Length: 312
Ligand code: ADE
Ligand code: ZN
Image (cartoon, rainbow, N blue to C red; front, side):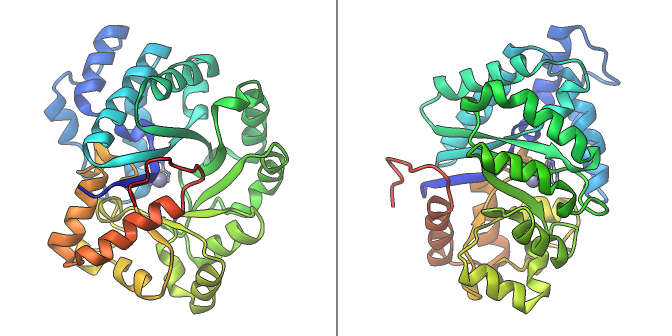
């Protein structure tokens, strides 16, 4: 299996229904159903928001540092089996703080799991854009005592109506702390969101970015500046940002000379981990091994951390 880095992965999006049930039992949390298949049967999404509603609901079972440890350990084992040599992992602290779960539990559990794994991995702390800029600044300040546990910041959750420029100050604060910067842009939002992420937030990678292809001058900018794009094909299909994998714009992005990577986003919800995304691109879109090898090489080029055994 080709070695690869995974650069767009929400750890909360790796919460499989079986683990939802196990953690609910362990923590004495009532669920509408304790049948993992019945939970999975709800995963028929109309758009990003309809997914986010269930994603935030399910995370209520994550309460202790042990829960976060188990979640990340399960992901890293799966990732390893899918050829992942290095992972840069998003997490959403505000989605836990708002439920009374401490940063200590979140960082404690996740960091311990990363330390105990033989997959190279690092954490990127995301701000929930629909919770506004003031709350993002508050969470960054609260996370600074854990500064050595994360390498960067990101911006996720409901995109449209929450443009990147609103988060200028918190991204400036993060830059001053030496943190790397990424943002979801151009998933459901238009090319203007990608421009803002680059110009205002000074992001070093764009998460998704597929709608950048609607603007040729933006495509030229991304190509010339070698800005990586973390594309998530199965996610795009399941959230209906593309009608089907056969219609995906990824091959055109590659033809444009963009530094595209392939990632799983929220694999417990979208029907596959990262190698499953690569295989679907080959089987359903007819992408060649040479194209997929290029994408895998790009993933190491686009990573923030030097990976000793990149296998390139
Ligand atoms: N949070 C988890 N997955 C996400 C996605 N695909 N887009 C925006 N926010 C997210
Ligand atoms: Zn994402």
